[in-house]
Length: 160
Length: 295
Image 1 (tube, rainbow over the protein chains, first blue to last red):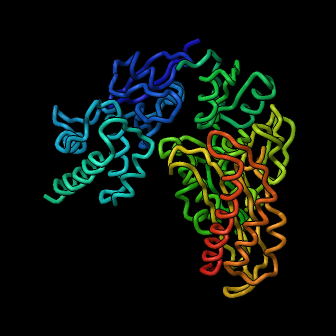
Image 2: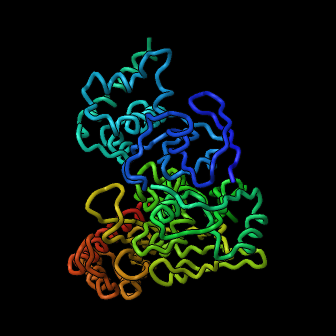
């Protein structure tokens, strides 16, 4: 039996009927067409499915869609504003932190939560914040550099 | 990976949750964070026909000081909330430290203390910490309520004393005595998303800043079919003057209280060596924290 859920996805109110055994990830990708969140291991080990649920990054493959009822979800699709990339996205492009791109949405959303809480993180804090997101091709160094660059860029815009 | 079919229930009071659990018994599983349950359901290890969510039951995720000298941690408090909680970091260090090492940041945002305990995994992070803090779990069913010491809670791999109609409501801990300090050390091949090869929690109480050891508690994970206390090493430490030598001897004694196996995470021999080293280091860290204790 399907259950009616109401939630906010990337600032937009959504109402939909979901099956109890549907994960939030399946709901986002298959019902909402938001394929930026990736299906990797399906077991919470890789972080490719990371979305921000009620201001916290979570593995959306381990959250039921019904559990997100009433919640607020931010996916990678909701980060750019008016066609302009978010400073973290821009930094990933500028620093060459993307190769295949499969881990990128999760990396960026974990980094965003970190920078929202802690605008001047140390390298260790950055590495800890993205430690649930596995990258198998770019390597972590460029990703860490991008998060540092994004922190500088965000601080620059706030000062001016 | 797909989840099998089930019926989903979302009670909004504890009474309703207990009633549902009573009616469905063995066919139902409770879901809080879901980071263990959904993995086991995807792997077809658990196949409940009913899943009862605790998300709308009020108060289950709260961490509240109690009676001025104790704390009550709601069973649905997340590992992330526990690891960041000021009082828990200050007075109940092994628990806050163990919570900060559980899974990954993404997992910690969902995983709960109750789930980590009731799953009864021998290598789980939070059981040894709860054991050295002599925590008790409040278990409720639709007809009864009881308190069980976490030192008597685990029965074997995946087995605990909790009954299918019982729900863990909270974990209650008395504040450790003055001049107490604790530590938690976890050994794995990497720092995140790791299941312990060996983990050690320690709580040490001194008679004064430079005094002898008044009380000592040590517990281990991943070295036996369930988390275990190191009673012989604890007894040896009591009344002694703290020193690196003494802590090393406690490490040696601890090996005898564990019965590790060889598996893909590490060999029995290596685990024994690491029990010795980690115990010594954890006692050293706990000692430094105990000396720095402030009222």
